[in-house]
Amino acid sequence: MTKINKAACIGGGVIGGAWAARFVLAGIDVAIFDPHPEAERIIGEVMANAERAYGMLTMAPLPPKGKITFVKSVEEAVQGADWIQESVPERVDLKRGVITQIDAAADPTALIGSSTSGIMPTDLQRDMKHPERMFVAHPYNPVYLLPLAELVGGEKTARATLEDAKAKLATIGMKGVIINKEIEAFVGDRLLEAVWREGLWLIKDDICDTETLDDVIRYSFGMRWAQMGMFETYRIAGGEAGMRHFIAQFGPCLSWPWTKLTDVVDLTDELVDKIANQSDAQSGARGIRELERIRDQNLVGIMHALKAGDDGRGWGAGKLLTEFEDYLWANAKKPEVDLGEVKPLKILDTKVSAAWVDYNGHMTEHRYLQVFGDTSDGVLRLIGVDLEYVRDGHSYYTVETHIRHLGEAKLGDALYTTCQILSSDDKRLQFFSTIYNAQTNEPVATAEQMMLHVDSKAGKAVAAPAQVLDKVKALTEAHARLPVPEGAGRHVGQKR
Image 1 (cartoon, helix red, strand yellow):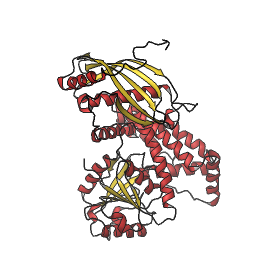
Image 2 (cartoon, helix red, strand yellow; image 1 turned 180 degrees about the vertical axis):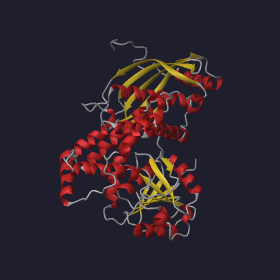
Image 3 (cartoon, one colour; image 1 turned 135 degrees about the horizontal axis):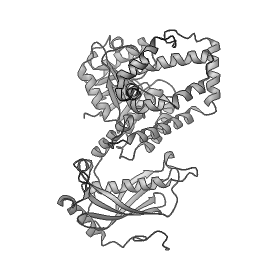
Image 4 (cartoon, one colour; image 1 turned 90 degrees about the vertical axis):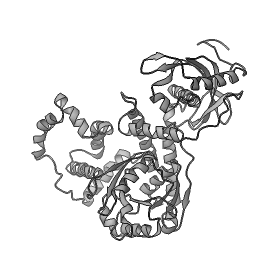
């Protein structure tokens, strides 16, 4: 896939700042132009939330962070950028002028995306010299976590531009969906507008308050939509007869006079006050940054849940996260390790995130197993057992684990792991891993594990191939010259 080498963000508010965070955490340098006097503070706060979220999102090796540079003009921002994202306020004249200014100063081959949530791209590209490379890239907030961008071309946009944008977005963990025809508000906001309009009527007519309405969404169809969307959900509702049966059964109700979608709510001062007061009562005790952190943590949890699937690849945003992690692992800098060096392997650096702790602020038990699992995965990659190897039908499976908890890992603690090979043969690999506190270098936990090399298709243990065994042998022979780790060979309950 073609990558983004340098990005420019014109406008650094909630959306522009989150685009910048998405680029930076993907290892891309970003130049930002925003005349707002507090732009650096706002983007700094968005960046902090994004880094916190990514710390919870994935254990895959993120590239070194890109550099953020604040500049004083559009012309300076776009120099050398191959992706330019415009995120200025939603006014046609303002956006058109900024995009025309970008077009005049940028490299003619640079992609120009607009974050507009509803303006037609044809209207925005009217005065451009190179309109074929301009399109709408409409994201969803927070851009650094929600991975979708609607890609919409105008009358003069080249189809190749949209395909190129889609490929580039994949390298930063986003899913670009190409919309076939330009239309005001595109697809997502059309749907949201319909629900929003109906919701305003329900509040105005005192059918429910804002909290009740939100509860109806989040405890019911909102959960279904996160994994399967609308039409696949309704296909299931049709039972064995599928979508045709569902439409036959529920289609007639569409003509019943239930909805007020064709009527626009009059947003009087009285209605605005009602909505604002109910919203304050619902969540006003929390500040906006606290709500953002809660939202981000919940989104991470949802995406982790969606990673599970009967094929091991996940559903929806979870499937996309799996694919992004595969990309990160495939493009990570390979560690330069001397397999014959007489010292334990340093495998992993990580930090205890908010999603990892219990009510005491300590890392929960299953997170220790996760860290040890990621450590064993790191060892396997060193001996050639990578994603491609696994997809070919072979891997090492853990058959036994003994964990000792020696200390406490707390929220925010930096950790690292080491691994020492204890023994091996053509099928088995026995090793001893330790989690250390990076500040004190004190051991926090140890794990002794046994793995078997298997043919996953045949479902049985088999000898590993020579190219893997050669590396295993080199490690085993080197580590045999190390002292046996304290705690190796212990059983549960054994005293020191």
